[in-house]
Length: 183
Image (cartoon, rainbow, N blue to C red):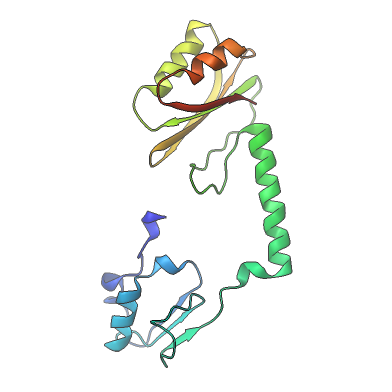
């Protein structure tokens, strides 16, 4: 994510002791490689250990590069497959989103009623228009959640009465709505 890109940078490396050994097994982009190599060259960082071997780090005595294979073990692959299947089922059955690259994490427990989910461009008034469509049809909202991430928003709305196909088409017709479904 952009929020964690170069989290370990020149500024952060100025705050460490020269005896520091930095371990990076998270993501390559979490560290600023130029800042790491400069800190190593200037002896402000004692060692750098990573499982993201890049040419600039190879053959350095102050760097230990290992292969990035943590997710490649049989157990890890099985666990990942089970997690992916569980998360896909939760999305299909409940509309919840977890660990998506492009959508915000959005989770809401079932609170009765009928569920509508929709994604939209993250711009003003879209949610208000959708809620107006529900109000115009005397549909009571039991619970709802709206989450956004960058340019996209995702919504889960539980309503007291079953949504009609006409309502779903009306929601889909709201400017900015990308997709809608009844779960």
